[in-house]
Image (spheres, rainbow, N blue to C red):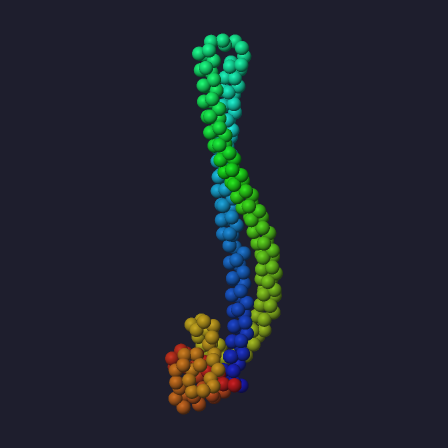
Length: 233
Ligand SMILES: [Zn+2]
């Protein structure tokens, strides 16, 4: 039996299991990450506050316009009510009326500015609420797909893991221990295919006797530099 080739086969299974497990961890991370939703909620709150502020300013401006209209009505009531006959008093009232109307025009300009500000704030707020709903529904769809993918991976792992364990029973425990230790140290790759005169993983050149040993099917030969096990097909 070619021990290193068997270990290479075991490694193929282990790498497959590693890949599936890594994807599962990635999925869990995505599912647990609610930062986009949280920041969208925060944005809505900010725009809500801006909208409330704009509404308050608009109401004050409306109140001031109405108050000014009231003053003008009172002024005109006196001016045209027929009770005042003194030319001086009538002249004063007329001047007051002109001043009130000028002030009203300024207040109405301000009211218009606040109206536009309020409409902008309202549109921005509505836009953020719509974007939030879209985000929630997209996230929901994405999460459902990821859940399905996670469960599929779980099924595949459950099927392959017992096969891997059964296969690993056929190995000498010492060989298995070496293999597993190197896998931990070398990012999962403990066995490399030896085809030429150098280690395909780290590139170190082998002497001809080391090369011969590496081709021997009955023993395990490791790279002197990176410790990986050589296998020849
Ligand atoms: Zn090496």
